Amino acid sequence: MIAIQVSFYPIGEKDIEKPLNTFWGVLKSENINYKITPLSTILWDNDEDKLYNIIYKAYKKARENGPAVMITTLTTGDKNRINELLGFLK
Image (tube, rainbow, N blue to C red; front, side):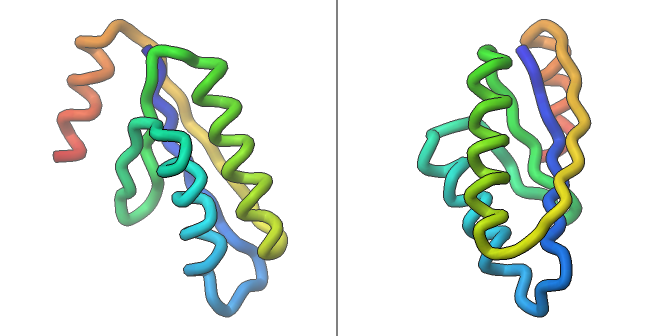
């Protein structure tokens, strides 16, 4: 299992809501596990390639609104270890 923390920052935009909602909209449409936190979005899945592809797709779609930076941090481990980490989000 893999968990990825994504921070997406629109650059030079007065209204960052549209690109962020576009990013999250792709995640929702892909039916992926994710949780939005005040500083980042956490995603997790058993399929590492699927997760990377969805994040990249969301990044490309959100960039249609203007330039942006995306920072990712990832961790891998067995399901119990990832669930332990995700428990901090509750």
